[in-house]
Length: 253
Image (cartoon, rainbow, N blue to C red):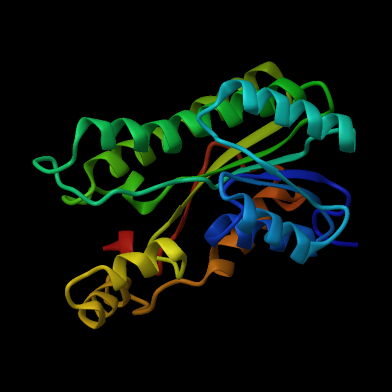
């Protein structure tokens, strides 16, 4: 028996990076996974890699109607929803003097609004089917500030406190729904690789990111996916409203 055997999960941002890694790990431990993303070709490829009964559906996480339809279809298809992993997110580089209002709004729309809509719709159905686990991917940038990414920091900080509010509400109502946030630092994903390759000195940037953590390496996708798996499982049945850090010691300083 897997650690999440026969549970039903939705993972956003599942076409690549952390979302794809989380979907893969949940599927390997027995969950039936609905993968979602705006990138249809890569999302379909990710679902094909996992095979049946896992499915892919296109989703713009900023679209409320699309969220409602997705969650309702998931319940219709699988009978319930036990796990939601809000992994979709974007980052735009630019300090407070350079970031535009359009960039600010876009990052908040995807990172904060998308997570809000996911939580709202997960609670809507989980409370009627016995409960579940919501896992929101924030960032260490939601705990400590970075001078070059004010919009990203703000949106990920919003995810952190949204998570706690959802957790408290669900507990107060007796819904048996847990909600926790995960805060990675630099993980070997396409987002971080793009940050390295687009810099003026890629090797210097890579070394800088490695040395940001006291463990002196960039994290692996599974470093995050295994924590998500734990939070999704019954092993974490007394864990809610928590902020779980996966950063190689970066925020311990």
